[in-house]
Length: 228
Image 1 (tube, rainbow, N blue to C red):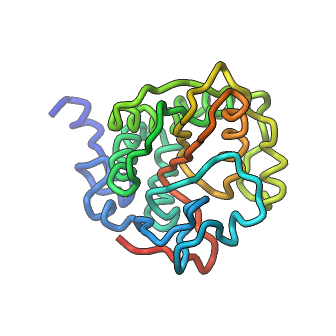
Image 2 (image 1 turned 60 degrees about the vertical axis):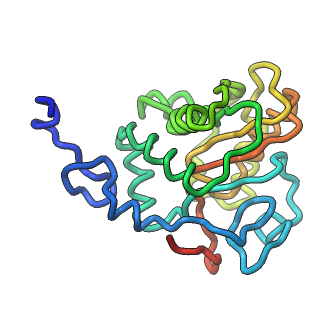
């Protein structure tokens, strides 16, 4: 044990107890998203469907989206500590949970949703990029920075669905040619607006199939989430 560990002992990001970045009890409390899921957006459903009420009628540039856990309970505290609390080690924990729940994608490369410059500077890191790096290593796929920002949209939190779509429309640009099949990584899937806008830019760069993978997913009231 180092002197730093003695002076600043590691505390669980979920419950605050000493000894671990994320304790086993809190990991067990995460609600894993298990089938049946919507074939397109990955929302928990009562029975398998190709399109659910969340994505029906929407033009989505990604082929499918999958998330490991429900964004509720302890997951909200974990993501808050990871994104805004500077707990960078949680990227490894998040990747382990994703690999446990989500099947390895059949893709040529992994990329990530780029952070907004001002917010990334304030946080000191981009959680999506760190998660993508961990997943690329676990899946033995190249990690490619394929996207940039064209503008800094206002925060999505609190916006209605239509406002979220307008807010991020056209806010991503390709940084070069993309492989035919790409995994696009982000930390949380809320409405799918950010994922769809980023996937659109990847399609313009040459990707024929974009699969979105996130650590957590916000669920609508009445969703059929399955426990761990």
